[in-house]
Length: 179
Image 1 (cartoon, rainbow, N blue to C red):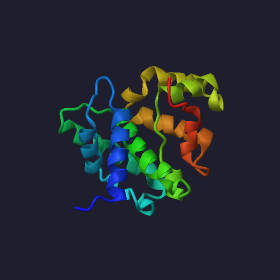
Image 2: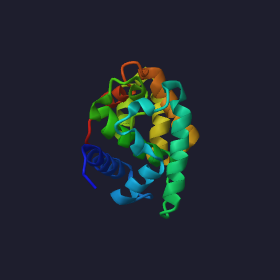
Image 3: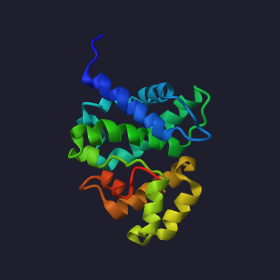
């Protein structure tokens, strides 16, 4: 097999996503994260963002990807929450597509940003959208413990503040990248 940039991007993106999503209570190696990503068929979009769902259909598809990630994780003895599944999915797409040069594509602009405590803390501190109380609620739950309804409520609130026209990834202006 010839090693291509597509293989290289997939390996790196799966590694980055796995490192970001593996948390206390749901620890897994990058090898397992890569298998979960492949079980969800996310790697099929790596050089083909035009095959992603239309922006208005993304949330429904994202729910299916999360369910598939949760089911795939169970096969490895993991109890994957919707928050952890979302982080794995969103970090994979961030690395492969958003930072991979497709950030201007309308479908890539609509992709969910990866959520963590740094973003939530910044949203609270800046009272983004006047939703300090709501951001505190999500921070108290913790991103890694979010269920499907909580995750979707968080995404809806973020979308109401940031929209997707300029790229939903711009939520990450509230992510400093380190503690």
